[in-house]
Image (cartoon, rainbow over all chains, first blue to last red):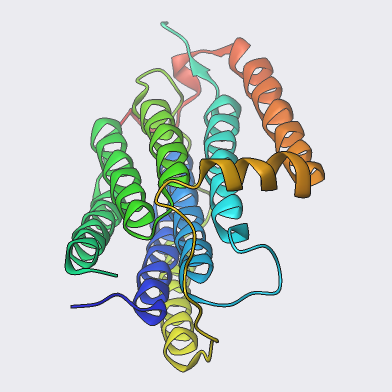
Length: 91
Length: 169
C-alpha cells in the first residue's frame, strides 16, 4: 500500500466536488456556506500533496504554506458569512 | 512513505469524505458542525500523513472554529432564492467538476521529487510565511481582520424572529 501524488489529487478532487455540491444543493445559505471550507480543504490537500511529492520551481514547502493560509481564509469566510446572516432576536 | 503513513492517509481521507457527505445531507446545525469537525479531523490527518504537521495543526484549529461557528444556535435562517432547477444544475456542475479534476489528476504528469523536510516543518513554513512571502501573509491577515470586523458589525444588529421565511432547522 502506498500513497502517490495521483491518490492525493483524487482525494482533493473529491473534497472540492463535495464542497461545491454542498454549496449548490443546500436550501439554507449558512448551510451552503459550510461547503466553502470543504472546497478550501480540498485545495489545501492538493497543495500539500504537490509539496510532498512533486518538484516545483518555488521553495519546497510552499504548498504547506498555502494550505495554512487557505485554512485561515476558510475560518474567516465562515465567520463573515455567519456574521452577515445576522443574529436572531429572542422575540 | 511507509505503510503506517499510507494507512493513516487512507483512513483520514475516508474520514474527510464521510464528513463531507454527512455535511451535504444533514439539516440540523449541530450535525453540520460535527460533519465540519470530521472534515477538519480528516484533512489534518491527511496533512500529518504527508509530513505537514504544522499545516495539520492549523487546519485542526481553524476547522474546529468553523464547526463551532456553524453549530451556533442563534444565527438566522436564510432561504436561498434559487429554485430547484438551478440547484440541480449546480449539483450536476459539481459532478462534472469532480470528473474534470479526477481526469486531470489521473493524466497529470508531475516530476517526482524526494522529500527532505521533517514531519512538522514549522520552522520552514514560518520562514516562508514571515520572510519569503510576508506580503501574502499580511494580505491574508488583512483579509481576516476585515472579515472579523465585518462579521462583528453585522452581528451587532439583532433581527426579530418574525423576519424568517420558515422555521429554524
